Image (cartoon, rainbow, N blue to C red):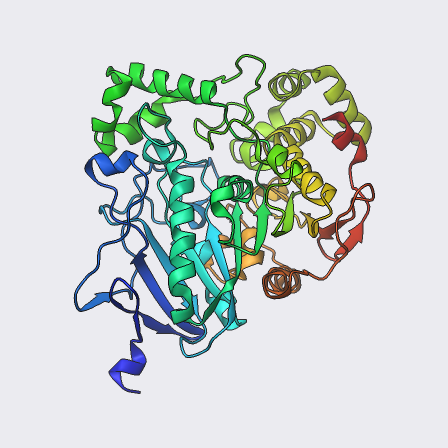
Length: 492
């Protein structure tokens, strides 16, 4: 094999990029889709990437967005968060996995990572695109601005700069992906957690029209946006913590901003009839006048097919690693219900009726998980299906044996199944995401459903329609079932 065959080159509009071969195709890493966000540009809309001369080395991943180190108690979440903050200004980049650049018209999938809007990157081990390239998909992952540069509301600066970055990456895909074998007319935008909440905002955003054909939302929140007044509370609190006027926040170096955001700690953003949609667990979210689910119910995103779902025990991720799943009391259940709902007693009663044998920890995790993800997922699914648009819903119910079995079907456990990346060694072990057990059959089923949806718009099960609300229960064995928890859904 010649050096050129070993190290493939693609000519983009900005210049040539040299990637590398993998056993399932070709990989190109760290390709700029926008200019480096430095100086005043840290808090501006993304600008076009400058051209470069010669060949740009795209064989290895590059810098990542400024981010803190994240820990989840006894659970190793390193494969989710990725390498952490890899210093370097030029981090608004995409990574591309493709079967072959000589091929044309392949379905394209663009993934938006999670991390509570303050951490994560597109080059985390969980998001390796080898499985998608092997199965005939061009997979794109991306870095976007997180933390204060991405999401802090500031006078004179556009809100939702992280979302603007994602839209800029999607425009790059429209312009360039055919050179990597992809079909720009068949793009599926998908994301998980914060990434799925960003995807919901993109679905509802008129500026995103024409940039994708399909959407997959994994454990996001169609009701998770902050109203401007809530975002202003975060801005003022951050300015007080740093001891600078809010107008001077863009001048604060990245290191200080990252540290200060972590020092903010839990904040109650309940304000003027608006509850904190993220239950004090996140300081940032898209800043919108209208929730994405409300916009979709009014007709936004009507030209996109939707695959949407969440995990059966989302809240376990936030309780099990520190032992709170076992130590929780009914007072703790009541506390999270007060944060999540205007009628907390009625909410807890519905969960108790639906789960008569649940422990206090299990009830707390259920209310927390639905407050963060489940209720907003159902609202977005109902909004899209209610307009007669193709909608498919799933619930991932396979239980991880990690943490002595306490992790279960927690937030994030579906990701190795979606990416078919379970071979990552750090995913296995008593304190790792998948525990000591794994279901390769379910991984093939889930991954294949995502690929099929991207290619055809049909994941292989019944559409989600109202009032039937058919849901695919992804477990061993999987089955399509009626609404699995009608009492809880009705309580919201």
